[in-house]
Image 1: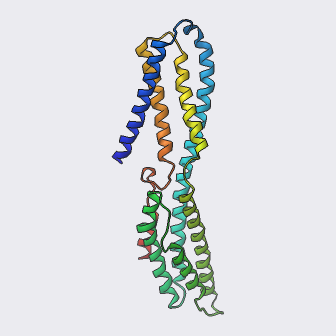
Image 2 (image 1 turned 60 degrees about the vertical axis):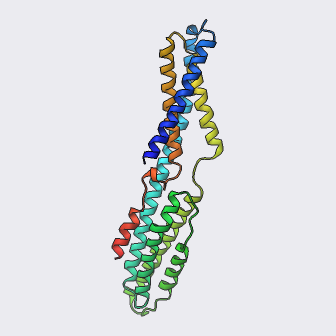
Image 3 (image 1 turned 180 degrees about the vertical axis):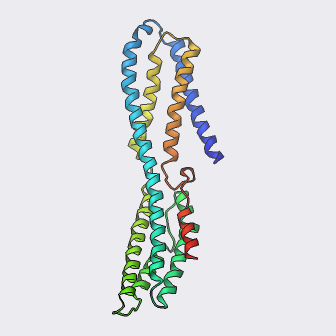
Length: 256
């Protein structure tokens, strides 16, 4: 976690240094004549460009926050469906009952101990997860029940329904792990738009050099801080997003 804070400070420090350098060069090398008279026109352009940049950054941040929320809800649904499936299978005869419970426990162990670290490190998810779900499907489908017992038939159907929900949420989670992050075009627009916004702030005149540098560096640092947040939130399962396997740990406790 401290590495994240250090990295964020380095990002902001770099932007502040760049903004200060641009502001200093503009004031020392550029012409000050007529710049204060252009404040109104420069303000109109800056308002439009800065507003568009703010809308874009806000949209990206909101979409990433929503992605983290959806990933958390999906993990909760997956774990809850797994527990519901095991509880429904508790009404099945042996050996299906014990086999389903054992496979459900193995699946939670696989997600917590193997798959979640891979998700956090942005690695491809592998392991026996899919195989364990296939074995669960076969165990439930192969359970022999009394055709006249509506209770057992209903619990078997419920177990199969909950297993389908586990399949769907797992597929979404794995797909999210392989299709994460922003595209290069979005990053290009974010980067270039941020640079243009900082440069346009140097068109204003009338302030002293130090005051002007403080204004420009503050703007550059704030923009870079938002870009850093976007970069860190690209992976909804990363440590910085604070999305852990707590839902599966709770499911493991419920499964005994």
